[in-house]
Length: 438
Image (cartoon, rainbow, N blue to C red; front, top):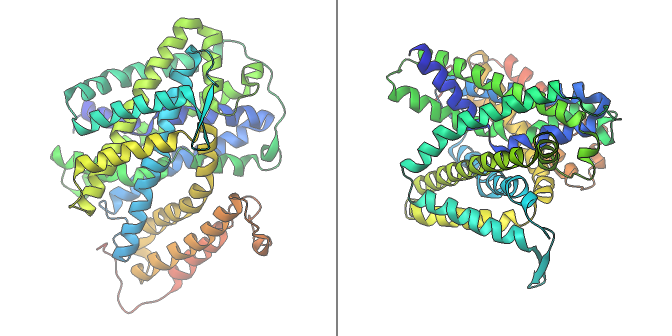
């Protein structure tokens, strides 16, 4: 591949990860972390940049078969969980809500007007917007054409230019003084930043994107595993550098937001207020247009990917039927509200992320295990068990029985047991060395 092809692959990978949802978490985390912002930012970068990077490399190393040593049922269940999480359960509805919060809500009056239907309270403008937004996404998913590709090719450069301008303004224009850390950022800023990075869901998406990039490389004539790994690593490094640049600037934006962040329950509000105060109505319109288009293309991609996967899993259900079901599900879930949806997603992500991290770790160590199949299954089982404990604790259940475990209070009780399981599996001896991923 030429240098131009490699750069193109890297920017495409960056575009895969950079949904508008990635813009809403760093500003709020930076604001809440205050004087402890550097620690929180480092933690966030570990799980929102470094982890997706090494996950992509792991997928390349395993030739897309990172779950090849798991029982077929377990591998399918884990894949289904990932597609549901990045699809109709959280990521896609969240993208629609970010488009509403940043692309529509700032321009309307009485945005808090509600009505009650069947005992359920709905936000009028939010319901109308999500119905239209996911209706358009459904039509584009049912009849994908060149229009969406053209929008994507125009959108990505505009988004990059906007983000560079935003980052420069954060560094150049004077902001408010950095405030005091609040909540868990006072005592556990690093760990809180790590857990905040889960919210991007990028490490989970990497398991899907990695396989997609390998397919793209094969279509370009790159068939050798070593060559695929080499180019995927280069693309991943370009994407990681871009993501780190965006996140760092947004953390600084949040930390220096001051009164602009007053009363904000998500980073979208902070970002919107900042752009409006620094660039006026024109900047607000530009931000709204780019975010709305970015969210729309993200949702179409997620709906299409989920519909295709479940169509392969259940061929009797047509792609179009599944696309409709996914879109309707997204519209329903979106009316939970952005802040509430993020709150609901946290226990799920705290449960599933340890399994994804453990999967990446054992993928790198596969050749060092005497019994790789046993190692993969044992380590992931341990990660899942303790991930469930952390998830139940994050959901508010009384898990005091496990309170004596290291890092339990920080929401990472899974870490030490999983590490011990990996070490034990490294010392298990076998009669034959299994090194290939089935």
